[in-house]
Length: 127
Image (cartoon, rainbow, N blue to C red; front, side):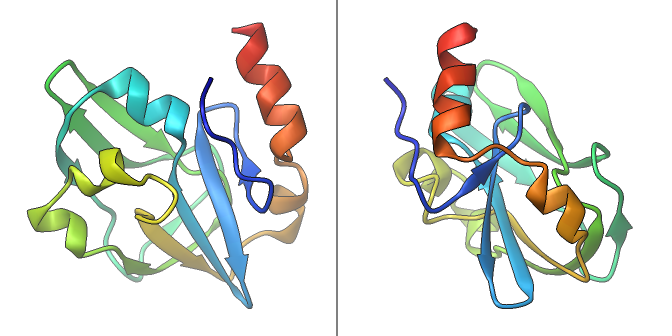
């Protein structure tokens, strides 16, 4: 079974969100990284760009496939995880430590609409 930390919120597209003050850290879930397999490249968004909820915001490429990252919250990209430029496999090592990007000025209602760990676990069991 995939790891689903209680402190995060989740999207049906298998992204996680962690709030830290006025910033929302976004990454992919354990389920997503296991499905993708060995990650070899991550195309991250540009700092300063604004994205709506459910827009493609990044791309994760593995030895198996390329997969779009669907933005779980409307907001502005405040930072990206530059460690992933040279070491995208860090997401396979610990997907909850190695976020993809950080949103600011994000939609609180979008955040509130995400699943908690219990709901996401049930969702995974239904797949």
